Length: 291
Image (cartoon, rainbow, N blue to C red; front, side, top):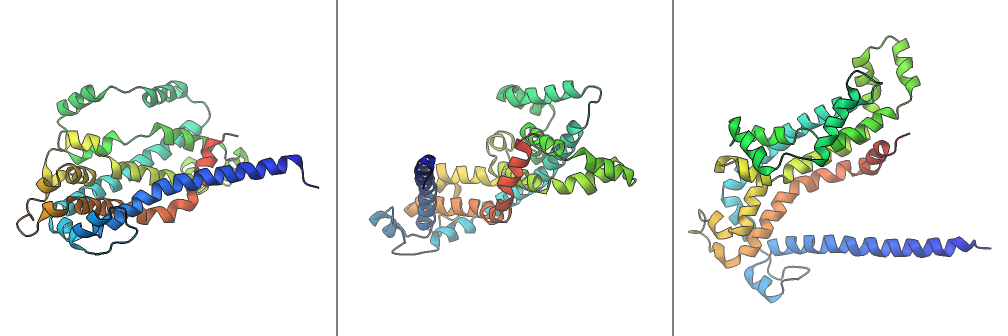
């Protein structure tokens, strides 16, 4: 005999699955369409902008984008900012989370509240820009790295993860003669692998997608990031591609050029994501639920 609540549970599962399927399609279909457009000729696109396969496939759009050396410079700048910024941010976040997970020490509550304050209030765009200008940090890639160098949310979640490690484990390590650094690197840190992998990807994606402050601070074309290059392509495709306009009719199919740039911009993150996906649920849940 079936329980009364079983039908309701199955019905809710169907509703949840239906909603998730719709949301997934809303994300995947535009993404897939962007890839198809990037490989389509202007004639193929005009005949059917929402085709599931290009009737006239071409690599011309990618050739036009790659002919312009700006994208390679932008890649170099973005990779540099992402790698250095992610290492810095995760080092600070993990170290701060470990310190705040320790038992009470002088000023712990005050420092934690000051850090928490920055999560809800900021100095504002104009004051922040004026401070950066006064410090002489305009047009420096390190400015973008330092501005995103601390994540209060990451610290709080990882702090809870450290606090969930049983005290008996740390005490056993001390009995064996381990000091604080050995306990941190050899005992506690390996237990936070899932969290560290999850937040490393979140941080890397945040640096990779950063465009607003890069647009305001980085003035030299040689320091343009990939997202600002994409923004320039989307807004002024013909202007950004004027170096290759003499060889190819760039204005003939700017939509294909835009979509090709979008695909090239997303490709590195798409390649990294599958390797860290398995850590997502485990990593977030470990720190989100405090025992």
